[in-house]
Length: 322
Image 1 (cartoon, rainbow, N blue to C red):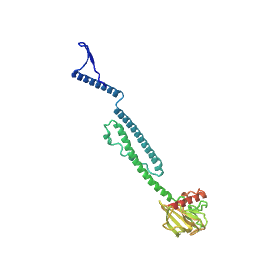
Image 2: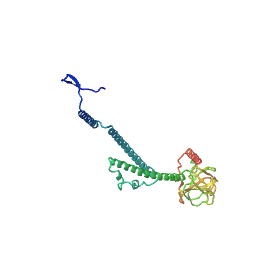
Image 3: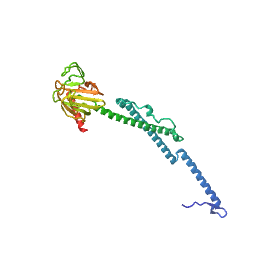
Image 4: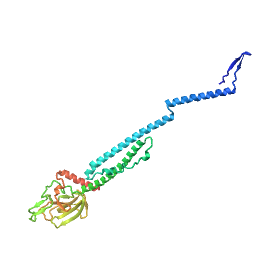
């Protein structure tokens, strides 16, 4: 690009002559031009910054908004977690513990570690200190509640296992099929059918023919298996634990030995009329902590024959899987 030149008319000789500036004037011109450019740039930059904002500020502003959104989402997640823990606590106090006859977890234990000294003093002095302290407090609350609830559920699981074991050992079924009639029950007999004297009948008789299968009414260990000199003839006694024992008398055949562990529904003997017996039947007896109990209070005799058969088959299948 050609540099612009300035000419003026010299009247003395009527010629155009090029104008040449003094160096000082040129320097002054350059300084004024630079100063004007700086002034214009400053005004323009100030205007842009105040109305639109710098790219860096826009980026920082966007990051701040993103952080606020993340804080909000974190707060919701914390609230949801606390809500879940509250639901677990309600199930714990109102469902599981009452069923297992367990006391509720004390409120003082559930809130252990809350309050007291200011544990969040190091979070003070920041722009969002209140928010940070609130979220840190919720996180600590969740930790404490989750730990207490885990311990509570562990104790419930242990108690549930023990409760299941106790239910398995409980003599809760009829020792023979329910299609057989009940004979003499738990009562005072004015005349014993064999001895002919008054005597307490401490069990329940079942009018079954020879060869009827007799089943264990609950899990346990055989503590007697053989001839009973007290009048029961061929007899089996099972210790179910928890203070419970069952007696099966007047058998014709015994299928278990002393010391053997049995499961509910296991075949343990065959009915007969051994011992002091006036005819074929099964004498069934329940003792709890050494006291005689009425056996009919321990089993449900309202099930059908097919239901009883299915129940015994289910017990047999379960026993084979163990």
